[in-house]
Length: 68
Image (cartoon, rainbow, N blue to C red):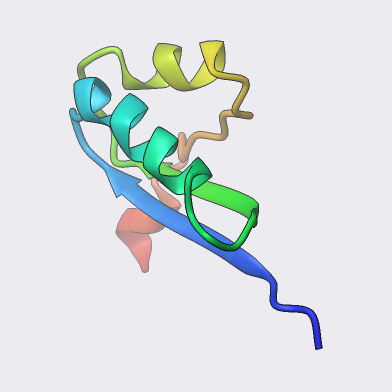
């Protein structure tokens, strides 16, 4: 059986830490198939950093997470 690894990462105003975290994920023993990053409405440059790093950005403009 082939192991599949996905990463779920939640961040809030940690743009400066994300580069190191993402590099660490790439260095793991098992290849990571997907990385899901949830940005909790950061007011720093997190979304721009992620966009420049090639991640697709989806936002919760309707506040669905708050309704759960």
